[in-house]
Image (cartoon, rainbow, N blue to C red; front, side):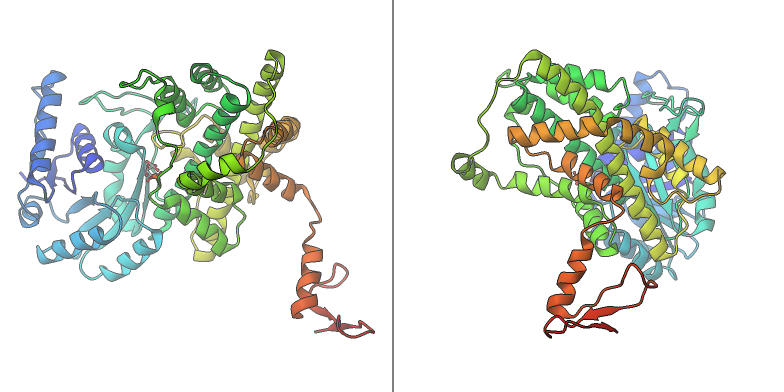
Length: 512
Ligand code: 6PG
């Protein structure tokens, strides 16, 4: 019997996607250049079956020795999932598939963290050979295994064929509560609830949306890290106390997967020294590039996303360990003051509100960036749907995403386009109520000399949007002064340009 779907690349993500697809009753042909990995996935399915007493259910993953064997074992037109590192390996496999005889109506789905512009190019480049489709995947290893958030984009006819499989393997959300339905049992996938996948749009749009997801992910992670440093360095709390606080916050409006795992990381003891593991992990952050791409794209498009950019810079400054070591002895900060228990408790409440506000600002930046990119590219993105598929399965999953979903749905019902999430009623009310605490938390950080680039840049973003008038008037004056770059006037129609003859004594105004 021919198989339903092929999976190429059996690293952690590919292997787990294959197992997830098989759990959902599709038969899989699996291939990797490393034959041990092929054997590995076949064996894992067997041992999971044995452990879950599913022996009566047929095994559905079949290992292949090469791509030709894989192609001839698949039902036509074929569906192939690529799970290989972003960049050159994707083209390597595409070309190998062409050599192995792939056909023009076969679909190849790239599930890596590819740069969205590469995806746009690839769809065009391979269009005569096969249908190049892309689907960004979020949720890490466990997401891939038991339900990721899936952001597919490309040929809409290809999507019709992929959709049933994707809806089966995606994470699920309880339709009433908007909360994830968590079940991580091999052979017993979640079949009820709303699947965390939706067709995003034309080629590249899914990877763009995933890129922004990762930009928000970087910012969300950094916000939590800043809170951790404030509480430990500024308020002398132990890692266990901070873990307890994060667990408590995780029960309220700050609920998120990232908050949950941060508490778990803080609670972990180092197996070697017995100290908190976090105190033994070198404070140099890595990155694979997606957050950076988001910041670059925001700069190119001209969309303010300062908190996402600051999160990338925070990782960059963390890697400058040697300079930080030197400067920590050279540069003066404020004298450390020992806070009282009351001061600490008051600060904890302020910080909780500050984090919530900063989080709203981060998401506002990310969604605005997607909206501006969509206008640029002519994509029609459905933001309520995007928020919906981020409610479970992905790394930034959080209760908060339900509020974003509702904000976009409410705007759509009223027939308005929500230009900025800060304008949504629930968020503008929450921000107005909590902004004073946000300021107090940032002030405390500044006075204590603790860097909070994300919490504070989010506040600057909020305050910038509150200003009907910004000092860009002076800036335009400066530009006109040294470069005759012209300016528009508040009392004249938009687009009308003026220049003041700064170098002449008369300083006459010229309409350009
Ligand atoms: C996800 C993650 C995943 C990966 C990123 C971030 O949504 O599942 O975002 O794609 O963890 O690549 O990695 P870096 O922090 O290394 O950039």
